[in-house]
Image (cartoon, one colour):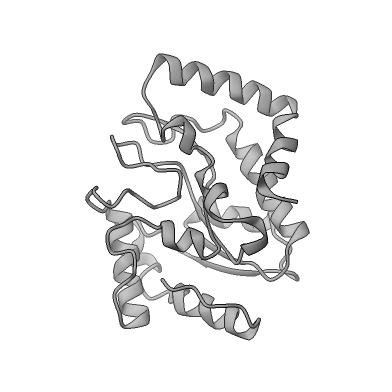
Length: 215
């Protein structure tokens, strides 16, 4: 299966048809991020047969020009948001070098097999969490379940309590779960800093004879 085929199956379900009607209406009436063609960008860049790591975010950035369809990532010409700044700090502390994504654009991670998945894939301008409970959570839960049931030895990085709650969808006998506080300034000092998830992920990939991620 490809992501296109997996998503096509979801699109046939009633919940998704209702979700699509809602979202289409919102794109017509108000400003919604990311741009419509980028809603599924994470799946376009990270092929299912190359999947190694899943990083779960919450919903897209809600400022103009920030969201690009990849959790935590922003276009290179945008100032790094606070969560991204903290991710880069942890990489430097953990790996003793700067990230290859200092500009905040995580496309190169995605192309190496890191699925940057938000649990909600759209948001209204300036209103964080505004598209929760429209149906995206069903869609992304089904994606996580699909990965859990059909892939092996995927490393899941769950940052913050909403992401950690998703661990009950993941078969812990088949996959690897690393959890910590969220990288946002509100919680990074409660366990994200010092979590060493980037080196730990690469250690796991090494033991599986998979190519490490160049963070």
